[in-house]
Image (cartoon, rainbow, N blue to C red; front, side, top):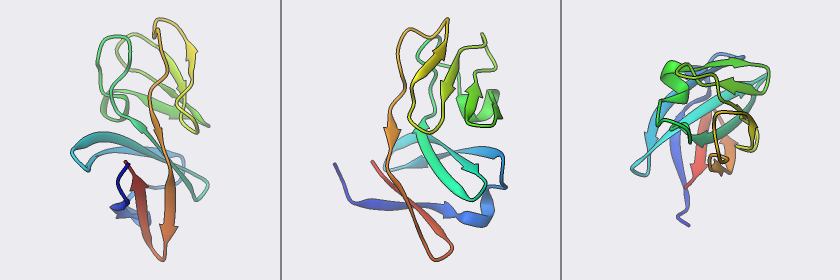
Length: 103
């Protein structure tokens, strides 16, 4: 695993929303839950749709916009079919105003 890499400024992602970005060559969805940030793979394990671009966030649950699979954005665990497997979750830390992710 690499070191932590800067993903974005904390202010780039409003509370209760998520954003897709490329960090360390990987497409990652970063969610802001009341000032606490979480990062998971952006690609749904069902049909490879973008969770951050096509999905929506309700609390800690991200729902894929393609077929409705659901994941816990805090740990990547699948919560609802049709997704067959979890998505990867990545450690996140805040340093000042910046969000860093360990890929």
